[in-house]
Length: 217
Image (cartoon, rainbow, N blue to C red; front, side, top):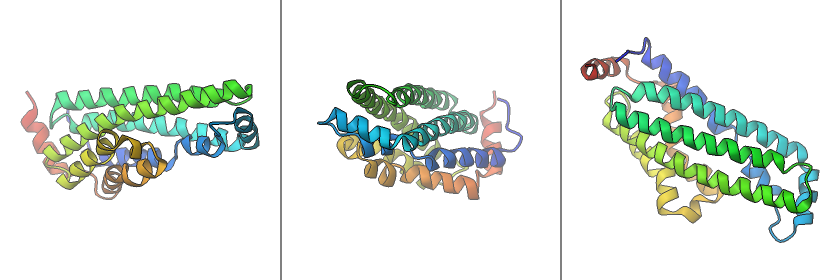
């Protein structure tokens, strides 16, 4: 197994991109501002009035997706010494979530400058695809939480928070998880805690190198 030159620096870079992902709030916020389920014409009018906000939301989505792809790749390298198979499986779920979110973003931006009925249809497709992506991200966070818990180079509490955070909300309280409050305030507690820890402390390089050496063939 090829060892990272500087696992602490790598983890801090991952923390930075995780922060970028968390900082750029998804376009669902803008959707909730303009969408009126019972009135397609009003939805189209609201969208026209808040077109700039919608475009900013799309840019935020793209930055968030790109940042999560980087995080997924770096986490795969960081957690391979713990369990290479689970780390690979987690990466697959993370990338699938990003792919679904990218498709949802296409629906999102496509809602601009359409007829009222098509605008509503595309917004609904965006919202549904967005929620589907969170199923993949929930599995990803749960697996990463497990890897953190089993590792010796990050605090176990971070792993517990990751497993009980977004994953717990999506699978145990799906209706609550569908609310912006649930997703941002409670569902992301584990991710926020992990992000802050990585930015400030990173991983324990000595323990990471010891684990990497012991897991090498």
